[in-house]
Image 1 (cartoon, rainbow, N blue to C red):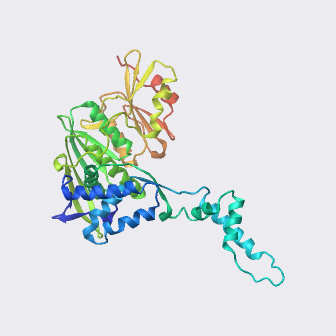
Image 2 (image 1 turned 30 degrees about the horizontal axis):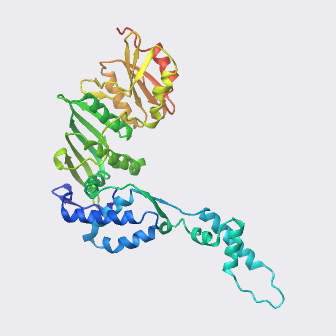
Image 3 (image 1 turned 90 degrees about the vertical axis):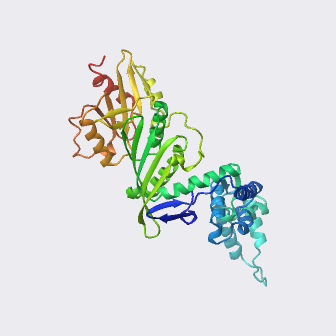
Length: 410
C-alpha cells in the first residue's frame, strides 16, 4: 500500500484523477527492472545496505515520487527479520549487567581502574555460550537498519507497474466516505464470489438488484467508520483488486481530498485499463470464524445437509440477502442462513426492516449479540432469528432448523 506522500493525483473540477502510468513504457519498464534487481541482490543482507544502494536512485524531490513508490511496493513484498542467535534485548541486559559488575569489581592495591570492553563482551559470550562476534553482531540486530532481508516475493517489471496503478486507486479509496459500485455479471457463481469477498473483507454494504444481472452495491467508506477508520480503510482498499477480475463494472466514491479534506469525487471503471494483480476468483471466501462451520455441522449427523452454494435472495422488491449457507433437508426443504456479525447497528436495522417488508424464501438470520440492545424488537419478522455471542454454533443452528424452520415447505 502507498502512503499519502507517494500518491500522484490531481484535483480537476471536483474529481480526483490519479496519474496512472503506461505499464508498457520502455523507460518505466527499465526503471522497474533496475529496482527489482537491487532487491534481488540484497537477499540475506541488511536493510541499511539496501537503503544505501537505493538512495541515489530514489532521490529526494517530487520528480522521484514514482521511483520511491515502486520501491515501497517492492519493500511490502519483503520479509525482514532480526538475525541474532539470542534476542538483542537479552544480550543488552546481560551486557549492561556484566558492565556494572566489571565497574564495581574491587581493585588491587595500586591498580588504576580501566574499563575493558573486550573483557565484558567475553564474559557475556561465555555466559550465553556464544562467540564474541555473535554478541557484537546481535547486540542491536533488532534496529530497523540492522534487520536482514530474509525473503521476498519476486515479480516482473510489467506486474510492478500494473501494481502501482492499482495502488494509486487504492490510496484514493482510503479517503472515501461512501462508494457506489455498479456491476453486471450473468454468472451466479461469480456473483456469489463477489459478494462473499465483500463479506470476507467485512465491508458494510447494501445491495440492490436492478435487472439484467446488474447490481448496485453501496459500501460505507473508511471516513464514515470513525472507530476503525484505518483498519477499515485498508480492508476497502484490499477489496478493490477483486473488481479487476470482472468485465463490466464502475464505481464512484465520495472522498475527502488534500490536507483540507475538500469533498471530491473519484470514478473508476473496468475500461480504465487497470490490470488484475491478484489470483483469479476461486474457492469460497468467508470470514475466518465461519470457515469451520460446515465441518462442525456435518458432524451432527442430522437429516439436514449444509452448503455454501446458496442462491442470492431478493427481499422487499430489490434489496438482496447474501446467504452464507444453505441447508437442505432429506425431504427437500431448503433454508438459507445469513450471518450478521461485522455490521453497524444501522445496517442491522435496515436489514430487519427489509425482511419485515417481505421475503421470498425461508431465511435463518444469525445475528451477533454485540449488535443488539435491550430495546431491539425482533418480533414481526417473517424469518427465524438466532442470536450468537462470538460465532454461530452448529448444534444451536440445527436446533433452530428442526424446531422452527421449514414448516409447511414442500
